[in-house]
Structures are given as C-alpha cells and as structure tokens.
Image 1 (cartoon, helix red, strand yellow):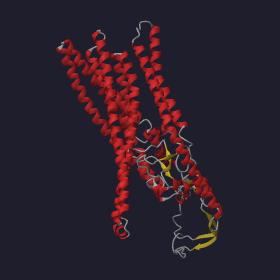
Image 2 (tube, one colour):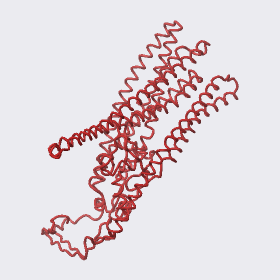
Image 3 (cartoon, one colour):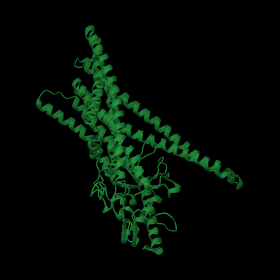
Image 4 (cartoon, helix red, strand yellow):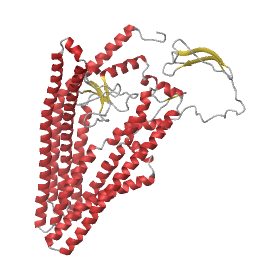
Length: 576
C-alpha cells in the first residue's frame, strides 16, 4: 500500500528475529531456573548466619553490667550493630535478586517500570495488561514480560504483564516506526506535537495525593490514627499495672488502674470509629473530586490528543487507573501510618519497662517477620495456582457443554473428558502442596510465637524474681509482642504499596497536568453582529502526527457558504 516501507522479505526476516529473541529468552529462563535453587540455599544460609550472630550479640548485650557512660555508649553501639546486621542482609538479598533476575526490558510507552521475562506456568493466574487475555497457550505460551514493582494481588489479579503475542506485535510496530515509543511519548500529544512528562516517584505520588485533600480533613484523619494507636498501645500497659497491683495486694491502686483501663478501652473504640469513618469519607470525596477533574481534563485536550489515543485507553485512565490511584489511601493510613505509630509507641513503652527484654524481643521480631512473609507469599502463590487450574477446568467444561452437539457428532467426548480431568489433576496436585505449605506455615508461626512468649516469660520472670522487674510488665510485654509482630508484618507487606500505586498515579496526574496547545477560552470573542459567515479552505495539506508520511488531505479546496448546510460524503459514508 501507499506509504508502506516494509517489504514482505523484510517483514519475514523481522518476524524471525523477534521469534529468535523470544526463544532465546525462554532458554535463558530455563537456565536461570536451575540456578534458583542455589540462590535460595545461599540466601537461606546467609539468613541463618545473620540470625545466629544477632542472637549471640543480643544475649551478650543483655548480660552486660552497665554502670559508666562508656558502657552506655558501648551498649548503644551494639544495639545499632544489631539493627545493621538485618539491614545488611536486606541489602544483600536485594542485590542478589537484582543480579539473578535477568536482563530488564524497558518499554516506556507501555509501562514506566522495567519488565523481566518470566515463565508464568504454575505461577497462578496472570492476565496480559495489553490484550486482557489470560497468559497461556492462546497468548503464545506462558512466557511473558512481568513488572516486579507492580506486583499482583494474592490471587494473581493486578500487576502488569505483557504476553508473548503482544510483545511480538509491539516489536513489529516499533521496527516499522509506528509504535508509540517510535513516534513520541505515549498518548500525550497536542496539536504542536508530543508532550513530555517527568517520572513520578512514590514520594511525589503520596504528596500529590495528599494535596488533593482538605487540610482540615487530613489533620483530623491523622489525629484519629495517632489517637487510636497510642491508646491501643497504652491498654496493655494498664493491664500489666492491674496485675502488678494484684500482686502487691493494693486494692486502691487496682481500682484506679481498672477505671483507667475502662476509660482507655472506650477511647480506643471511639478513636477506631472516628478513623474508619474519616478514612471512608475522605476516600469517597477524593475519588469524586479527582473523577470530575480528570474527566474535565480529558475533554479539553487538543484534537491531536484524541487522534493518538484509543477510547479504551482514556476510559481505562478514568476508571481503573483512578481507582488504583485513590484506593491506597486507606492502606497508607490504616496500615502503614497506623502500624508505624504502633511500632514507635510500643517500643517506647517496652524500653521504659526493660531495655534488655526489648533488645531480645527486637532480635527475634525481625527474623519472625521475614520468615512469616516468605511462607505467606509461597502459600498465596500455591493457592492462586490451584484456583487457576480449577478455573481452566471449568472453562473446558463450559466450552464442552456449549458445543456438545459438535463434540458428540465427531466423537470427541473422550477428548473433552481428558482435558477436564487433566486440569483437575493439576489442581489436586497443587492442593496437596498448598495443604503442606499452609500447615508448615501455621506450625512455624506457632513455634516462633511460642518461643517469643517463652523468652519473655523466662527472662522477664528471672528479672521479676530478682525484684528488678514487675510481674505486670511481663503481661504488658506479651500483649505488645503480638501487636508489634502484626505491625511489622503489616508494614513489610505494604511497604511497596505507594510504589505500585505511583504507576497508576503517573497516568492520572499526567492527564491532570496536561495543558492543550490551543486553548478554547483564548483568542478574541466572536462578533455578536456577525451572524452569518462563510469558510473557505485553500490548498489544505494534512497528515496525522503518528503517520507523517501518509497525507490524508492533499491540496483540498472547499467553500462553505454562509447560511448553507455543506456535507462531505464519500463511498463509505464515514470517516470524514
């Protein structure tokens, strides 16, 4: 066709080259998979070494007699060293994972983060973010480009994946110079050409999101968060004081702490109610405000903007991206901020009761969070894989029953039975693995929590027998241990929530910030006395920005008379 610069031979050669790249990546992933076992073993050994040395250092520290200022400085340095051990392991883990993750693929016009070739077979449900098809045989195989920053949910939904077929199509378009990345920066265009945009970081995303909310509502929400967690952390302290008063047989002191306990329990309930209501109202108001602003921004862009974008892309930003941008607000407030406040207040209370017991608890708390998170991710992956196989089996059944007459006519009943049974057998195999993983995870969590409680009771009891520690403080530590463990796991699980949400926030805020090249509100107003005008076009040349070599208007001359209706028609009757 006119304007085409790619011959059939060039197209075949390019297709073979793309297939060779995909095949090479599949072979590379298989070779990397063989090295994953070695990587996991080495990281596990490093983790055990870190935990062992941290426990030895913690036991040595709590056994020290601290009397002079030099001994105090030495103890502080050792506490910092305990923390640095786990920080070093976290850095080592991230570096090893980065080195052994393969070569990243950058597709800036498609996704802002690096994508990695990944074999998604037996990895749960995964849907291509471009064609919205389940990654599998119909999408060219289970090999796909996956973003490791935008991670999917517990059942595989969400995240960002590009299937093999979409990658092939994309590569062909880029080679022919018609892809978005070859002609400009995504869908952001004006009548004067492509628009550039800066990458949004997680910090910028959070700041922009908070700036969209009223200051008074924001302050009220954070006051409710701090109040709820501070009061919640003080409740175990008061419970411990009640027990200490009973041990002393002090009735007046016991009555005082019980009254205070009732007051704090009531305040905790009220603060929790205020936090829940405030978060829900602010989220709803924020979604409404941003929806109206985003739709208004979409309506006022230049015509070249709409020529360059599909309707589905625009509605996706108005619906899915906007929802993902606003939804992390409750997570950031109720999970991240709230648990950070809980950690700070809880550790202050623990330090005030006994710094030695706090050091021991902190030493065990860090590996507990790591082990619990690893087992939870593995169990969630197996559960998602199991549901995926069951869904595939149900899909086979739906297709078979829908086309039952054709199947029976051609004697294909046994083939359909085999397909269904094969998927169900896969689901059964994964279900057994899920049962073992869930059981081991529960057993491990139980043993770790029991060990922590035993350590608190044993060491706290020895301090209490030596009259250097109150019995009630043991109760306080036991309650706070469970709260602090849950807070650490929650903060760890949601640490990258703003990073993932920043991807959707980038696509929303760049539209909100986009200004058209031609403002409808600018220019001189139309004269009120000129009711009828005529329009004349002379030698008009026009080509779309995405296809500058293909002119759609060549020397157009047209006269539109005043007060007349002029229709532009053609053979197809549309597209004019």
